[in-house]
Amino acid sequence: MSIALSLKDLFPYKRWRKGQLELAKEAYKISKKGGILLVNYPTGSGKTAAVLTGTLSAALENNLRIFYLVKTKNQLVSPLNELRKICGKTNITFSCIYNKKDMCLFESLKNVEYDDFLRYCSFMVRNNKCPFYKKASILEEASLQEVDVMSFGKEIKACPYELAKKMASRATIIVTVYNYLFHPDIRTLLEYDLGYDIKKSVIIVDEGHNLSDSITGMLTKELRKSWLVKARKEVLKLYKGEEKEIIIQELTKLLSYFKFLERKLGEKSYLEIEHENFPVYDLNPEALFKVALIIEQVEEGRLITPSSYTRKIAEFWKELHKHRASRIIVAERDFTSTIIRLTYVIPPLDTTKPLREAHAAVIMSGTLPPEDYLVSTLGLQSKNITLLTMPSLYANNIKVLGIRNISSRYVERDERNFVEMGHLIREVYRSVPTGIVMAVFPSYDYLKCVLPYVKVKDVLVERETTSIKDVISMIGIKDKVLIACSAWGKIAEGIEVRIKEESLIKAIVIAGLPIPEPSS
Ligand code: SF4
Image 1 (tube, rainbow, N blue to C red):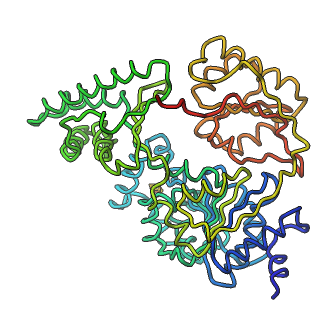
Image 2: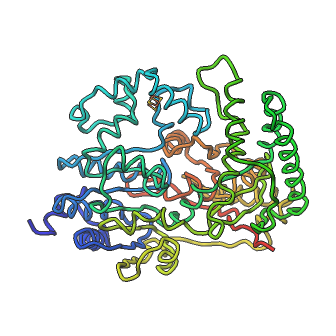
Image 3: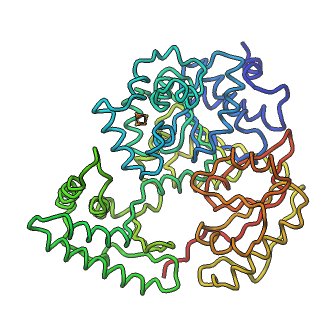
């Protein structure tokens, strides 16, 4: 079978769009010989279908497995749609695994924190108390051909996450979120549970401009002032051990340090703290974990209690002195609390190991950062890289307007600024006859301040639970909608809302850029 025929057989459409065949061939070549393909193709050029076609063709010839990775759950929609079309014409199998809590069938666990959810889930599985797990465990993997695990799991009352894992054990393609391959702890689970061999894999990273920040974000640990206040109350009320006094003393000192930081932060949104200047407290994480366990057991009347705030302090403290050379400490604040964050400047090498170990990788985006940046932040080797760039297809259809004298900089945020920004968004919205106008804010905090002044009737505000389906169903009943969302959020990143070939997004207001204040 020639390459062209093979690609043609797999490609899910009648015609190739401009640049798609070239991309599919390059993806095929890199997946055959090994290496890294950087794809800088504009949004809307059809890169998902082309890259899947090329990598799949090579994967089938060389018995490779493909990991297709996206940043958020919402971004799974596009590869899954393409895969359903491709797999409809072949016998290729795929599985989609994402956040276990979102896949869980217990509605009552939807609102608990993720760490607590994992403890509940593992408690129920260990003690044989989850009927959905039991049902999933007795199902034969062969009975799961071509099923949508969420609907099938609900229908037969079997845990969709466990079903997806079963399907993944034989699937040629696993579609999942970045964490599953780039978070070292979660990757270990995947290796253990699915027994995959990364050396025989092709990794496709979608929206690759996000990867570096997403990895540092997933490894960031935080300590909130509000947690300290609650931890102190817990220890005072529920702990009677002999270290009680010293723990209270040290937590109180730490609270005073937060007050000092708040004064230093002043009007700034961000402050870097040198490791040497971070105060030393007599807090031993191991001792705190023991205290946390006692506090959690004292909370009676439940099978398993939520994590205590003392545990959260212990977890932060345990991390504080690890990897000092590559981590920075910053103080920030949101609307509810002042926060100290322990974060990496660039991803630790261990996290990006799969990109170096895999047989091949394709990193693609509509706005790919320069090659040098990707080499240095992701630890790639320049000699293995092939770069494929396509100019924007729509550059001539877009009008870009910049507005002077208004900014979302923290120091400029006041009532007047919120009113002006709200007014601007309303004017853009009014100038568009039908379709979607998106207002992308630099943060949820700024969005909340400006929104009351936008004064538009049909607004969809992005929340943690908002999905692309919500956007599509709202536009189905309204002629015109304003979507208010946050940069780096689920809605702003790489979405397309189309009817036939026409994009329904008619205007985008960039209501400020998410750039931190430079540290002093
Ligand atoms: S096993 Fe599945 S259904 Fe049961 S608690 Fe865990 S995630 Fe939920």
